[in-house]
Image 1 (cartoon, rainbow, N blue to C red):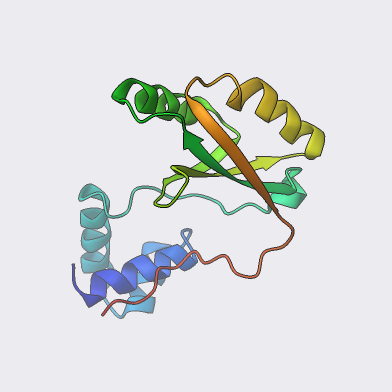
Image 2: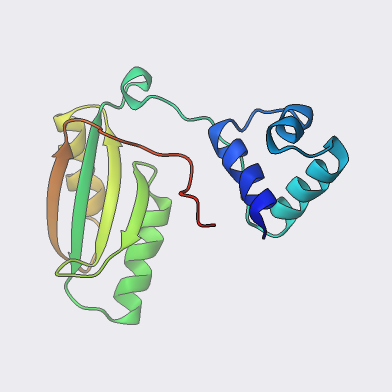
Length: 152
């Protein structure tokens, strides 16, 4: 991947609805090579898809919970079962495997605190092997970037 590919990626991260013509103009390429590069980035799995960025509050999910999970033990069966359940749970938007005293960090969107309580009682508590659940609620967003930092 060269700097021109990174320019294409950054432009698409800023606006995934660009036409190939507009994208080519932004990155200073003619349309045919720009399209070839974009398709190659998609085929290589660098660009994995396109999506709309939606405002959570306007959508009706104004509460962001950041949940740290510690497993009771780290056997293959416990880890596999936990990770399978996370992948099946729609309220969990992101799940990071982390270092430190906890094992996972989840980002969850819910309508309100009652919805979060129901999520914990019905979804998280039903997953065997969880040793502890520690939750923080985000009460604001200072920055949410959609464009990767430049590396070269």
